[in-house]
Image (cartoon, rainbow, N blue to C red; front, top):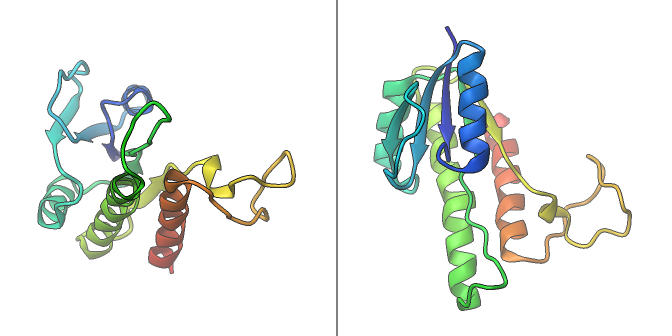
Length: 161
């Protein structure tokens, strides 16, 4: 039986992914930053600060997943009135530092062959000249979210090597 860890399991995409994985026969572990109402009884759920590396290491060792889905994200909207420095710090904390902790924990775990899926964003391309982007489109983010997601893509490439 496949064991899957979904980070950001209480969000819309995470919730849908947990359901899909469960229907495919996977044992599903869910992580979210708050312990809110858990509506999926088939998910073994934990509240966790992904920026807490020792706790991330402990959870990965306990779950020993075959697949890790990193859907956690901090996205700033225009309606929020936060100083730019705070927006950048929060974006990097969740979208990059948290991801680094997960990738490091997977690399150091007893099951280092676990596959990691990172949900990036089209924001990594910024304002591209072409309407359609592909693997050859250069990353040129122009917002904090895009910058942090692009950094996450590079982190994944680093750990893959």
